[in-house]
Length: 155
Length: 112
Image (cartoon, rainbow over all chains, first blue to last red; front, top):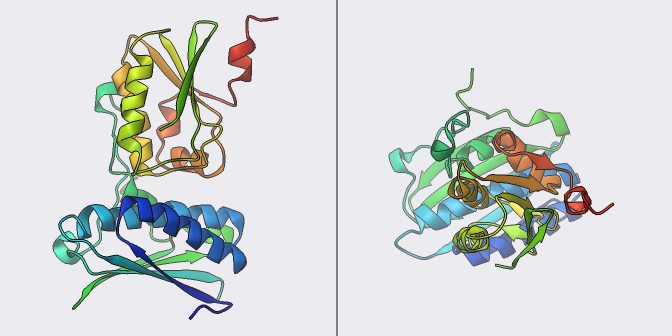
């Protein structure tokens, strides 16, 4: 049940449904006082996490994603649960920033997703459960405090 | 995917009439860009002023369009705002494009 501090959205694991889920989450967190700039960070990171579920966890099967949000202690916790394939190696991709100082033909056309997720969150947890995957993203609601889980591999 | 191409001062200004370039439209975007740049001026400017959100698939499709346009021609961006600008800055993809605040100056340059 939704409260002043929490909400739950269940969405089909498809590209089209991701759009609607992102819009809904943005409405839910804005209504609960999350600053506009952080709303943007949340939408960018959540889009990548949901796209990853659609493309990989649900590559061969279909299913739903349950998104639970909770605001407490100046933090937003987003919990994503799906019932698809596990993350390879049962661990989170590191999320290095693809090299951009390369020849035109070698410019990266992908591989940005996990980098952005790491960069925009202060904490990131992955658990493989008996019935699927659980990804927890934690965002600070104090503007400068995110980037805590950044792991770009940059010097 | 609603893209609109107009020629101004030997610049092919391509306006994206959509709020989002994301995983669900990335391939359509790339195809539309290819067909709109097959002919016309060598200087292409992609006007993103109506776009509110780009995810990594959309970003990849924009980079792919620049690669497809190639060395002999030029592709710039215009009208980046809010979350779109954030995605380009975070991934450093802002450094591979010339970025214009908007297309007004480009479209009017030789008019006055």
